[in-house]
Amino acid sequence: MPKVYLLLGSNLGNRTLYLQQARESINQRVGSIAHTSKVYETAAWGKTDQPTFLNQVLEVETILSPEEVLQSINAIEQELGRIRQEHWGARVIDIDILFYDDLMQQTQRLTIPHPQLHLRRFTLMPLAEITPDLVHPVLGQSIDVLLESCPDKLEVKVYEEAAP
Image (cartoon, rainbow, N blue to C red; front, side, top):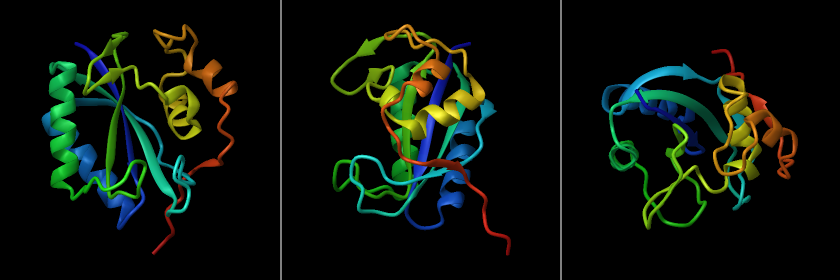
């Protein structure tokens, strides 16, 4: 069964709740979640004048095609209240396809592997936690090696939710 790696992100509202709801919906509609990284907190990347993000990577076993996965995660984002107003803007939920097995695909709507994942520490750290030896099919390097040479220096730390 194909494995798809998804990156979840949230920087508005109850971020942990949005990640939880996204995981539940993914498990019901995309496929069985095989591995889940810890939740990480990082400053916004790209457009930096916004709240910090919580990010998490999931490994999902799916029977869906890449296009069906994209359609499902876009529907989940919309149901959770995502409004696309500006590129890299603040959002209640963001779900990106990082890898789909070792597939290399580029269409108008979908590029796999994600074209910027090797430039983003907030993507590589949780990915390295669950699959450090996975080799990027385009770059030919493992996730650990990509993390080591990542030009992004934003701090990415394990998120410790405040006690009630």
